[in-house]
Length: 306
Image (cartoon, rainbow, N blue to C red; front, side, top):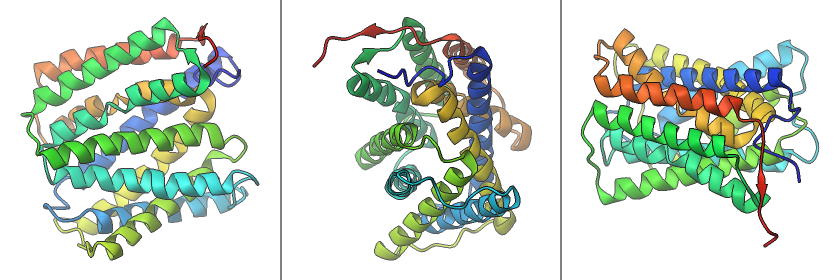
């Protein structure tokens, strides 16, 4: 059976490239969080996400055409990509921002970052293989470090509906990440990212109309900030897909837990929010987890057939 958590080629250069792309993905998503802070003011997130993903889709389409790549995915991957984009990523993003209306950002983020656990458990169930000990260790370090960073930043408080939304969000993202890892094999990352952004934009427009939840983003430089969110989303999507194709969903998920740390660092740089001791300790664990996950090279213990 193909080892989906190791790099596709097994070459160390691809391991490092895939890990670097996962790090770049997390940093760019962190810029999205910083730019989006304060734009919702408790309102439904659908309009903001429609514009965010729409900008990303337009940028990616232009770059795809300019680089002479096809605008359509490879045959056999189109339906799976469309479903992953709309029901997967589009729903995940809406659930995340909806959960923020029912709990602190720290708690919602902490619950969302359970997704590497679900990704690993899903991989075990589908592949009937137990991940290498290094990956399990890296996962524990990443989750622990993320918890320290997030909880240390603010209090843990959330309503029951917020808990349900946040956990459902992490499960939805798990489904998207697993599907993208297994369905998208031959389509190039730019084309995939363009479809992903377009599908997520359409999904959130649909949600806005269905739930009568249209609310235009407000705040200082709102239009410019939304454009920035879209631009960073475009770059993050390309890095995400390219990383998945090199190192698989499990290691991408573990390294992606760098995002809370990079959010804390960017908040200190741009929003004058201090870096706490918990951010330093948790950040050290997350960075160590990323290194361990990068060095894990696909040893497996095969489970009995179920």
